[in-house]
Image 1: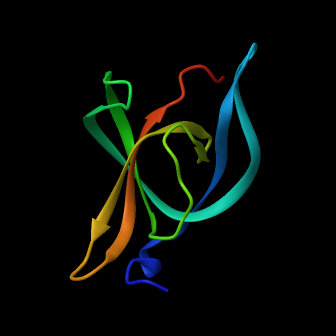
Image 2: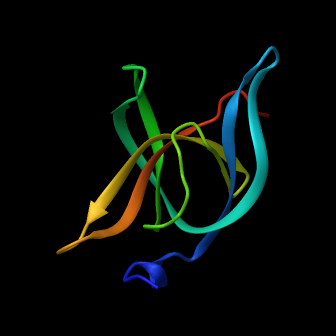
Length: 107
C-alpha cells in the first residue's frame, strides 16, 4: 500500500481499449479500480498531436493498469484517458495521474 492509498476513496469502472473494428472502438471486459477523480480544466496534447481539454484528473496507485484510450466510468459520466503521468517520489514512482476527457458520444 502506497502513501496515496488513503486518498483513493472512489471506485470507477475501467474498460481497456483493444483496437478498432468496422463499427468503432472495441473494449474488453470492465474492471473496478480504486482511484480518486477530481474535476479539472486543463489543455492537453494527445498522442496524435491534437490539443483537447481535459475535464477531470484521475489519481491511482503506481501499479494500476491504465492506458491512453481506456474508458473510465464514474458517477454517471464516461471519460477517456487522454494522458498518463507517472509521479515520482524521492527514489521511485509514487503514483499515477491521468488526464480525462468526457466521452461526448455516449448518452
